[in-house]
Length: 204
Image 1 (cartoon, rainbow, N blue to C red):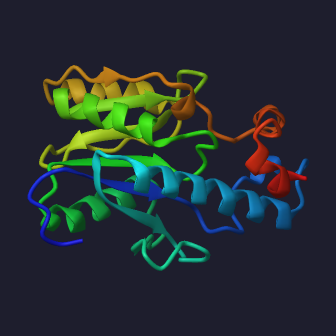
Image 2: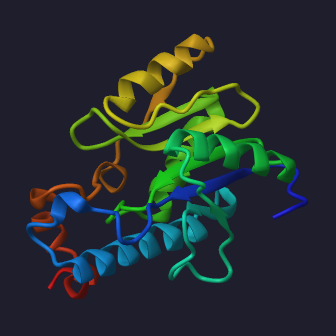
Image 3: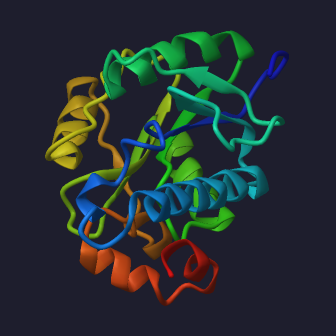
């Protein structure tokens, strides 16, 4: 990962496979949830690797599991998502990138064009974010790597990320694209997911 003089790096965050998507326990067996988590993460990784705007992609997780060997995994020490992302940012600063993109591992319909649009917005303003479909959460965040930006992932994170950017005297751009809005957290999301051909095996 070393030697990049410019560009944007991506961090994809994912929980341990046995702890993710607990809200879907009534609809999917534990094995099916694991299969779904792996399939969605693979889609996000592949979209990131295909994006023209990214210099590299890493995963932050407590485990490698099925993450391809070509993708570095930064170990999540269990200190909390925001803290783990901050630690990853500090490690990746040495690569020389100018911006860092944070994505969750459950964006089921994301593609490279979604990522490029978000990164472009972040480069123009210093901070850009992509809200979830409800408009309350954050499904993607780009920030200048040298900003003392405090990650606010969790409940009501869109509002809190906007407030954090404004604390730094930046008016963030909000990027709304279907591929960035759709994360899989609830039974209705799962039913929508059933319309995607790649997901049939994971949820069937």
